[in-house]
Image (tube, rainbow, N blue to C red; front, side, top):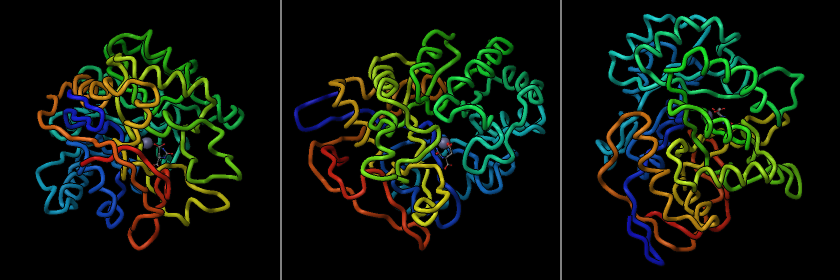
Length: 349
Ligand code: NCD
Ligand code: ZN
C-alpha cells in the first residue's frame, strides 16, 4: 500500500455482502459496485429466493449480462444459496460442484427483507449443515432472533446466546461469517471464537449510531437491519475493523429500495451505499486514524477467509471533496443513497 497526503492506492477490494436485486434494478445498481470491487458475494434474497444451484446459475448469468460493456470481465459475482427448512444435503453437493456458489445464507424466517422462506428452526437444517461442514462451504448468518418479544436492539445479542454458540459447538469445522455485525457483543464473540468464525462490517454501521435514525425527525434512509445501535457499539465495530484482525472484513450490505418504499408508513429496511462504498469506508477509517489498515480489511482478509486469491490490480482514492447526488435512477423509480446531498472527502479516481 502507498499512502500520501492526497492519495491512497490499495489492492482492488471485494464486497463480501451485497444485494443486487434483479432485472432493471440490477442493471441500475450493479455498475457502482463493479467499478470499485473485483468480486462480491451476492445475497440470494430475491422476491423468489435463490434456493437451488440452478437458480444461482441463472442469477449469475443475469448479473454478468447486466454489466455495462466497459466493466465486462472486470467483475465476478460470487453466488450464494438461500437456506430453507427444506434445503437438502444433495443441494449442497450440487452447489459445491457448480464452482460458482461460494456460500449458503441463513435468514431466520421473518428477520428481514424477503425472508419469509427463511429457516423457522435451525435444527431442521442440521443434516444440511453437516454436509456444508463436510464440503467446507461457508454459512453466512443474518444473526438476529425474530421473536417479537425481544427488543429490536437486543436481537443480535440474543441470537448469539440462543443460536450461534450452539451452532459453533455442534459444527466446529463449519466456516461461519457473522454478517453485518452491529454490537460489541458480536465483536467479542467473533474475537474469542475459532478461526472458522469471521464477520463482515458495513460502512454505515461504522459511520452512524442510532441517533441517526432520529436526527431532527424520523430518518427512513438510515433504517436497516440489523438496526443501528448505540455509540459504544459503533466504537467497538470501528475498533474491530481497524485493528488488523483478519476475522473482520468488508461487506457493504448495500441494500437498495425505491424511495417510495422507504418513505412510507411501513418503510423497508436497507441502506444503499454502493454508490460510494470505498469512500464511505475511507471516511470511517480516517476518523479512526487508521487509513493504513483499510487495505487488509477491504482487500485481503475476506479473500483469505473464502480461500480465494487476493486481487492483484489496484484502485486509488483521492482526497477530494465532492457532493453525493440527491438521488439515483432505479428502474424508473428513485433511489436515495446514504449521505444524499452531503459532502464526502474521498473519491475513487
Ligand atoms: C436487506 C435487504 O433489503 O435485502 N436489508 C437490510 O436492511 N440490510 C436484507 C438484509 O441483509 O437484512
Ligand atoms: Zn444484507
